Image (cartoon, rainbow, N blue to C red; front, side, top):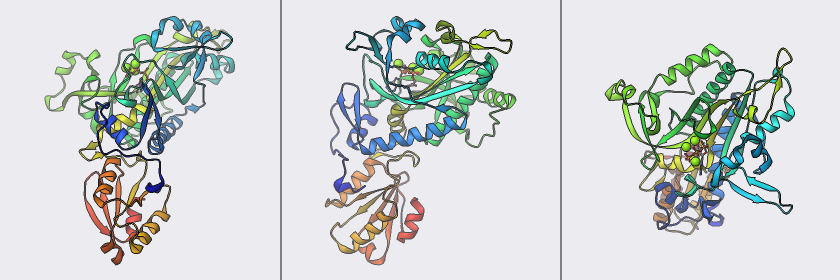
Length: 436
Ligand code: ATP
Ligand code: MG
Ligand code: MG
Ligand code: MG
């Protein structure tokens, strides 16, 4: 993308309405704009980040055998009356009436819809387990939408739902999903600590929240630092073997981790003092095993091995994809702006032309840009060098390829690593090899 012609509006000043760093930086780096309270448009650079996150989430869901589908945002109230949640859900649900006076709603979550779809399609225990997910916009009419996309009203969520024949196999599914989550967050370049969670209104007994540490987080967190050091991508788990899943899960849950709601002072005291970590965290994911709550209330059965109908055991598994954009920024920034992990960055590198209009500089920049225009932002604007450097730091590209008249004459590019600040000089070929 050429910056001179892009829809990428950076701001020099801090917008007055933004109270936390990620919100300020998302507005200043031109990622989002608010269109109504708690509702945002994703501008080109922001959309690239949102997609990168969704792609990683999708790959890890697929890797544990979940199947992607796409359910609509609008739902019929009838579905929710069947589970009994239509009245129980309260004012967070946006209720809509169509021209025929039918009650509709904008989905805040999809347990009812997926259970109904499952019931229409799956008839026999032989077709279990089924794990289904989509990545779709949700709407919750939050009393206090705030902090930008961190607590929006319309937000993008990955939600998966599982159906198993019995409790034990639903626990296997839960553990598989736990592993997928740990791997997902590690690939996103952040640490999200899994914590025992209250099961709340969805009900059930087994539940974990995943929290990214940040001072602006809404929950207090207590955890064993061993959880920060695990390499979940390197962990060898056979996801088709119950024993292997159990070993992984017992190992992981042997380390203390709880939000303030679930904190247990006695168990905490047993964690060695040098490994005790206390702070604040942002909820970016939440998984539940809730048994037959919806299959029973909506009367959805499959035929069992002896022909008698039985109620499948369910779980649901959410990741706040749009909230993650903000949470990653909370966890990864400095005074100059965002520091994107390479896997989610909107562009791999920015090419900074220090003297646009100078034929040597222009030619070298064009050559670099042509190597991978889909991965590069080319700052070809007729701006001062200082303004270009400031915008590059603000937007947080992992690499900056800096081309000035002196270097260009010698066929050299200066490379800056955004995270370390380290600068080196290289030939254009070596520079491209490094950042690609
Ligand atoms: P919170 O405690 O922040 O209100 P929640 O517990 O109500 O979140 P869940 O029902 O567990 O949310 O939904 C799954 C995920 O969706 C959450 O872990 C979070 O990452 C994301 N999410 C929930 N509400 C919002 C929101 N208003 N804006 C952005 N993301 C959200
Ligand atoms: Mg909520
Ligand atoms: Mg919550
Ligand atoms: Mg939650």
